[in-house]
Image (cartoon, rainbow, N blue to C red; front, side, top):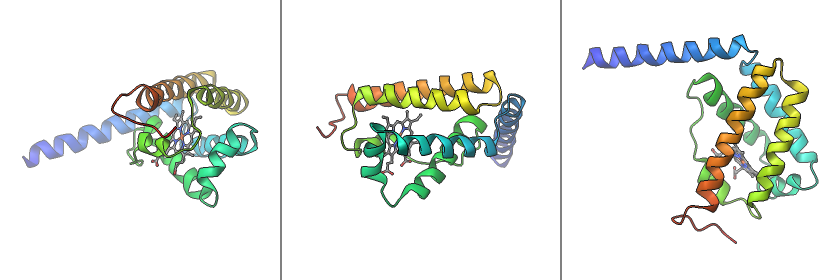
Length: 151
Ligand code: HEM
């Protein structure tokens, strides 16, 4: 049993090391992800359509949100497991959220990546990841009969 646990821990550490090395090779590390989150949510706040939707939910809580999003992106890119949360229930509480807003979100995210990404590979990885997660959120929030979003 101890042996299993040790093997598992070693395997996880090796996976994490590989993810961090793969990401570092294309210019993605924790510092870049922090810059990405700060820049993106700065633009979200200034956006006439998305800004008020976020502000209605996050007024007075922006610093915590940014920290959470930095951990989220580290977990996704660096596989270091620092994020634990439940994105679907969190988004069900966002008043006025609808499917077309995700198009705006992705467009703004893409523009941000164009402006700040250190390499095209970093841009491609982060954009493809965001698109995949957005699609999965859309399915869970708007196309899941078990979920009744507020109208
Ligand atoms: C129009 C689209 C979106 C809107 C308006 C939106 C809005 C929000 C808001 C207001 C919160 C804070 C919830 C709270 O703390 O009460 C939140 C949390 C979060 N969002 Fe989004 N979001 C959108 C799309 C996305 C996408 C595409 C992703 C991923 C690529 C994402 C990832 C997250 C994550 C990980 C959290 C933290 C959930 C938690 O652990 O509490 N969001 N979002």
